[in-house]
Length: 361
Image 1 (cartoon, rainbow, N blue to C red):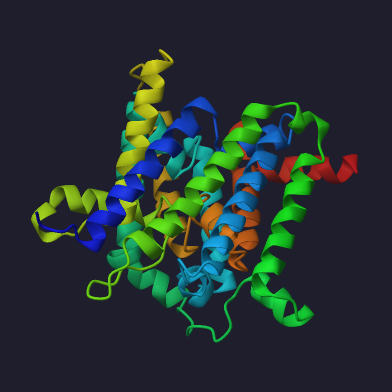
Image 2 (cartoon, helix red, strand yellow; image 1 turned 180 degrees about the horizontal axis):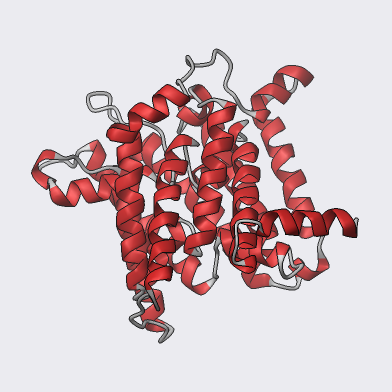
């Protein structure tokens, strides 16, 4: 029997974790925009706390794997060759704005497809094509011209490495302390502690991200067929998935392709079991326009920022990368701007909302 290639092994492992992530999206409603809407419009930060718990769990898993010698965390491009601060901010703002227009992120889009949402198929196609074009196609020239990629850094660009060097403490101990502090912040809310489902989903998502590091750093490791260390992200992999299914004989399987397929399968199975699967489409042309524009902004923005809400928001954050909080804040601000535009119905919505906040405080 022919041995599986590193790419095929990574894709299979990616699909396994992707199925779990699809389950988390449908059953646990694990969604960035839902978390942001809950905090901004509903005054409930439980969704954000669940997200923080996922980051902390993934961080403990990632650095435990690194400490055991199963992966080399410092080889991840998030901390070994990060993009510029400006690219992260601009890309994050674009992604957040597009996310508000669409109503979810790339990961949520896949979960919606698994639930029968046809308009998310359109968003997936637009986001995948625009992400691939920004990575390797026509708009890649504009991205490179506007945001030239800097040289690889000598010291890993992560808070764990920086704090370890500054304080003289061990790298892994420092990472664990930071993760435990984050867990304490998340569980400090009695309201959040009273929601075991959100706690369980946060921990489960974090474990899946750690599984991604293990899968690509250990299971897919091959001296003759090297595979890059990566975990879950749903930006460029959407484009890779489209390219693979169109040119299967001329393309190679990747972790991200398996992850994309896995999320759709996991979401579909969960939706059917819950009797929530139903076909949906856009109500009118205006909604379709928002889906297309939002998908384009998310595709370009995620590649520019080197990741989406899952890629930068949890995978990069699990390595305590400098870029992660910058990307998350930028996505949050972009989503806030987009939500205010939708609520007000005009481009002046964010200005009016900001003015109201100033007057209130």
